Length: 204
Image: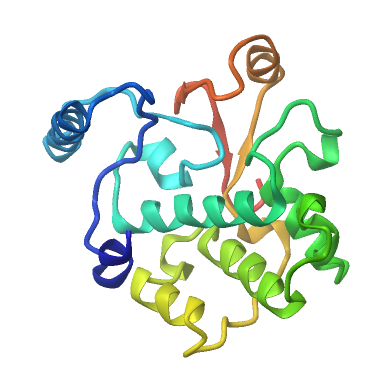
């Protein structure tokens, strides 16, 4: 992970791997997936809703920018203690990215922090992580930081830039009622292709 964060050269679409899969199988699977994407042979991009960047779901193209988006979702998930998309939450909280943006616009970011932490954290560090997660989740790939910059932010060498919490600037998954129903009746970690979910560009 550290090596990937430092050089920012990873260019493989992340996919869920069963826990029982051996390391050798994972390597072979990873190479196969990478080959498919590099040769544009794949007709469907499969991934977990909330981790897939807008351009990945729309074009099926993986880049370091799509990795940054997924990493941003991971940061928010860890700090907030919940999945990027949770159909069992109230409507305004169902999409984690949208909820954090909404709270941030009201200068109330701390309400999104995982309650299980019970206040055992430094508020400034948590705010930095939340802002970094949102910065990585910009709908425009060019507005996302590089992995090298992310390392600098995490190590405290460079402050995280100020961002607008206007939801129009983030790549929000727009989930249909059918997809929500499917998520509530199947495994909570179910995968969906980009054919099953659309993405809001610029607040469309």
